[in-house]
Image (cartoon, rainbow, N blue to C red; front, side):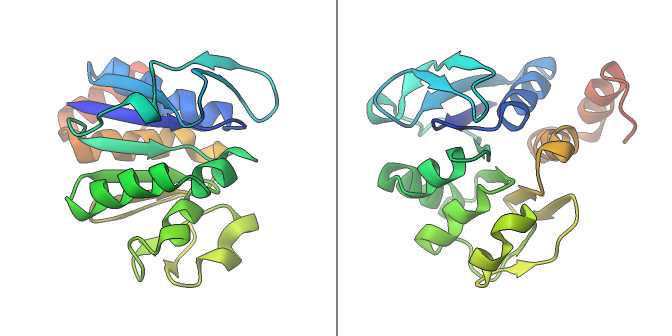
Length: 183
């Protein structure tokens, strides 16, 4: 299994790093991908600087099983305005691979008309931009190969939902138990 986490300047720290942590605990390979032209990506509050594994412009993400899109402001805006991000998200979705977007990142789908009509959740501040979707609210929504989360506060539940889609219940229970999270 392989997961790619797309990082744009201004990503939400917990929404990017929690899925990385959860996947690593399950021995899933995770690679971070900088969307801009520099591997050094700064989080939304300037708290964390991540040196991404690769640049999207140089990457071949064809071997991935899942794509994770963290929110954060202006991170989700930077993701949504990138044609390259839209292309890879559309390809993953159309091929039935996992596309997981949290907080404001479901706007990336809306920017490209990807997965219209599907059930999703998102941060309350962006829900009006998601009129083409069945925005049901709630913490985490799984609709086929599309996984969405409401925001930073549900990062662990969101990450475990991605893990569950990629692996089995036993792996999820083991990882959740190791983190002292009940599932």
